[in-house]
Length: 61
Image 1 (spheres, rainbow, N blue to C red):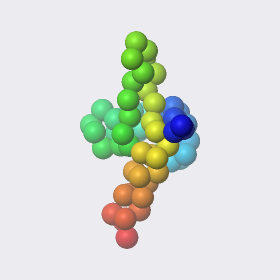
Image 2 (cartoon, rainbow, N blue to C red):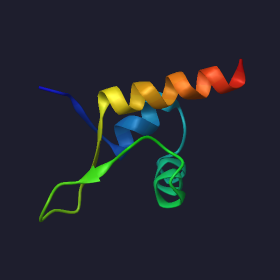
Image 3 (cartoon, rainbow, N blue to C red):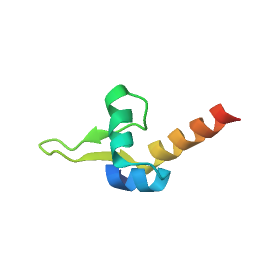
């Protein structure tokens, strides 16, 4: 089963403010995310966050 991260956990992992991660989500630039049906919590699959990091590293190389 995949591991899911909260917005705060993604921000901590990327060493960026939670507001930045929320902004990325709003403009469609951050890692893939989803809301749990019937809830307010936004979650990120760990593999999607790792893919986002790999793509960012590739773009800076």
